[in-house]
Image (cartoon, rainbow, N blue to C red):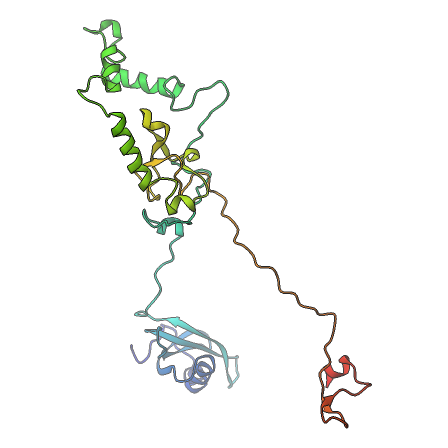
Length: 308
């Protein structure tokens, strides 16, 4: 650190010489023995100077005690303005504060933790759009029809009547292939059961995470259904902050990242202590003449005791 730092404005002579006054003020505000050497001064304005002293307190490396003194116009007495501890150019500072929503990373959530979802969360959308309207992701919805038209416009050069062959999409062979009927072998009942037992053991209702969850996955918007008979009891989690992200979970499983866990539960509040302020307990002040114990005078009241 330099011995003295000044601005372009020339500091007031009397204020610049008031080093002892500034040191005394810094020592009164700080703990004993933590105010170090005088490391500089800065002219803040007309007859206003800030003195800097080294801070020797542990945990405040590079910080400085800043004491501002001032002098009135045509006055010869320098007075104290304020004393504050400020970071220096090479001081040790705490990292910039980051909101919890940005600090949270996948895998940070444990049993009993809740992750509220915003009402406008871009990862979620309404699961229904009206009585007579299909769901937005339904195959017969208007949105899906527009996507299909856009896909056909990119793939085909004209109408289906001008194609050299009929499209295979929707044909019996294509449906059979999608359903898995053209595979040489499929899962047996035994294979389905052992897979279900294995998945439920890892992400089922008996796990510690599910026991502390506010709700089950069956009502969570992040659950992605799967096909087949296992889809009646399992789905795939799509919440990146959930410990089961990308895993097959039981519909009875749950975690704190449930899409509808928007209201944080209030912690249990202990009952307030019972304090009786309507009575005054007598306290003996002088010994009684017969027993040698301390007792109150007959005319002494609680109000008098309070002023004694």
